[in-house]
Amino acid sequence: MHELLAIVSFLKYWRAVDIVRITDYKPPPTVNPIIV
Image 1 (cartoon, rainbow, N blue to C red):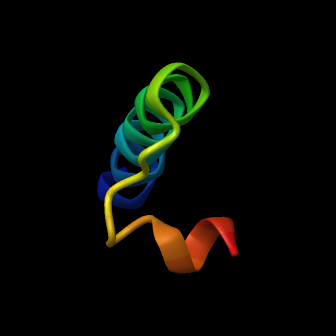
Image 2 (cartoon, one colour; image 1 turned 180 degrees about the vertical axis):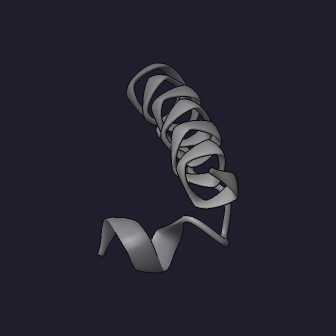
């Protein structure tokens, strides 16, 4: 159950980061390795 919650929260965070990437195109350093 905790794993599922972590995945859901991660997806929500990633979606928020994706929106920021589209609008601002300045992803946080911690997300850079995931994008590349």
